[in-house]
Length: 312
Image 1 (cartoon, rainbow, N blue to C red):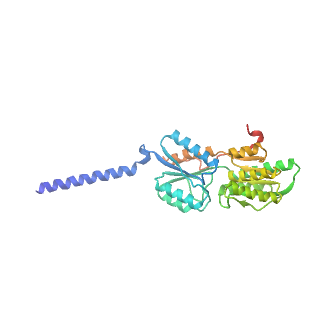
Image 2 (cartoon, helix red, strand yellow):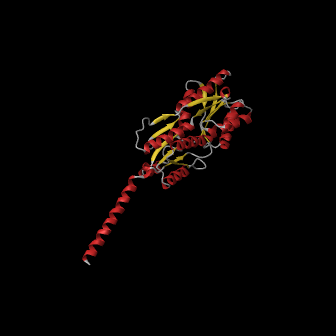
Image 3 (tube, rainbow, N blue to C red):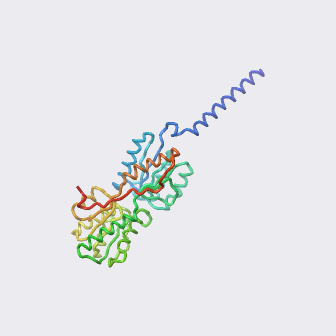
């Protein structure tokens, strides 16, 4: 009886040791042992073609890497609460990394802190939040905004216009990328006789931005700047309805914006490289998950001026 009891105890001990060993293996394996990394892209919304292109770049990199389970998760409209919900859903879904285009610098920081505490790597694409991340891949927005202003100023002066009012249609007062664009745009007109009116915000919605631009036109502006895709489309459509006498310059590249440039309602747009943001952002996220060093933590993904002459 005593031997049977000893044998039973030893068997139980061995079983517990085996179970403990299995638990230890699970803790140390994960994606590095051959499973896929779960990487989520969370953008400001799903409306703009810009975000579709970021998604395309991320998807291409994920396909090339072959060890990524990739998901694009984004609110239907720009909304801080909805973006926070997207971050929380990604963490609950087992995200290893999140590529994020933040609506604003502060609204999502608490959600990002929770994500980091859960072991999630953060990579910013297009627009960062005020929270540490592995890297940020974005346009030098202030420099690009200044280029937009210089393009408008050059066109106005070529038409003999050296003074007048200029309107700005922006997304909101919090989104870091578009705030920087506005800052650069305003800098281009410092020391001139042009008057930059108070900025109006349309949340990147083309219809609301059109109404804002139409109101600027009734105030007699000589130029309107759109700070993102929706703002630019709205401005271009308002200029079109008013007869095209106002110089419009915008940001981002979409089929609608290109048509407005072709037809003369918009002078030019600052075309970013959202595919590069998505593609390189995915590569950086996976490098971080593999524990590899990230050489550059701030990457300028570039911008180019598109006008009628450059459209084929």
